[in-house]
Structure formats: C-alpha cells, structure tokens
Image 1 (spheres, rainbow, N blue to C red):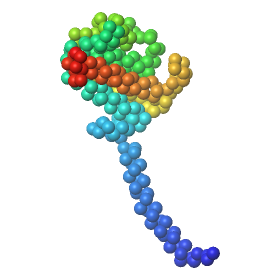
Image 2 (cartoon, rainbow, N blue to C red; image 1 turned 60 degrees about the vertical axis):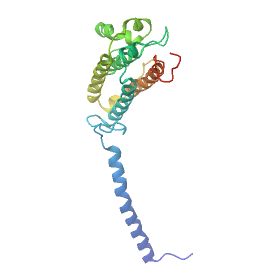
Image 3 (cartoon, rainbow, N blue to C red; image 1 turned 180 degrees about the horizontal axis):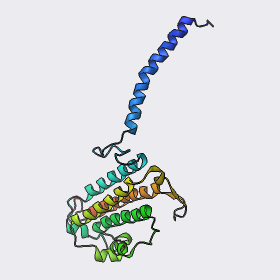
Length: 221
C-alpha cells in the first residue's frame, strides 16, 4: 500500500478544515434555534418561552397549546349546550370546564404554597370542591351560566399558574416529592398531569358535544 505524501496529507487536512468550517456554522444556527425562547406568538412551536426558565417555559408552551385546543372545542357553545347531560350519571360541559379550573387551582396551591392535598383553606374548598369532585352535586349546582363564566374561571386559574411558574426555576420543577400517592413524583410530572388532564377531558367534551340535540350526525335527536 502506497504511503501518503506530505502534500496529500496537507491537502486532506485542508479539506477537513474547510468542511468543518462549512459545518459548524450550520450547527451553530441549529443550536441557536433550539435554545431560542419563543415569545408565544407561534403557539405550535413548543419549547422554551420568554420570561421562564428553559424547562418551565417548555411546560408552559404545552399548557398553552392544550388550553387553546380546549377553548376551540367549546367556542360558541350556548348555556343549553353547557348544561346538557348525556345521561343521569354524566358531567356537563360546563362542569368539566370548571373542573379544569379547579384542578389547576389546587395544583397551584399544592406546588407553589406547599399545601398538602385536600388540606385546602375553607374558602377555597367552598369555591372549588364541587367542580373538583364532579358527580351529583356538580350536576345540581353547576348550570345556568354562559360560556363567559367558565372562560373567566379558566383565565383566572391560568393567570395564577403562570405567575407562580414564572417565579420558579428548573431545579424546582425537577424537585421530587417522595410522599406523593403515585410514588416519587416531581413538580414537572404534577404539572404535566394538569396538561394531560385537559386533553383527557377535552375528549369527553367532544363526545358530549357530538350528542347535543341537533348536533350534526345525531339524527336520533
């Protein structure tokens, strides 16, 4: 096998340097794009958000995207729609929306203020226990309200959540609660549950909406 000449070695090294010079700017651009904090104007670009630590900002982007989907589902619903019960054991759309606000409120109290689950102040329990638990009392009490009533509750709970998250860092987000009923659970998992919980109930809301009297494809009504 012929040994490489000094000129060939130098030429190969020059090509490698040139290739690296072309490649590293591309990596730099990609890295900058990956770490750039979005301002929220592109909600479907999930990732870090301005005003939050990197991991918390990514969580906020997911919470925001999921809430956008829920609001799209209920847009234009009337009071009759919001009060509709699929059967005697069902939850109304209005109750489910207030349940989302209750869940977010309680997770904020728990993770931001360190209040043990179910040890809420009495004033909070009077406001949120019925929608949190759903069931018969919710069917009896949560009705007769326009969509704006539920949207206002969701907006208040989200504003509280975002204000609390903005004050915290990624170390807090990863802090593990070893006493949580699910087993060792960090704040990221708790708040991810708030997000996936909305996805779960959005599916319920769509199911109920598909059975509204006069809904498209509901010929039996």
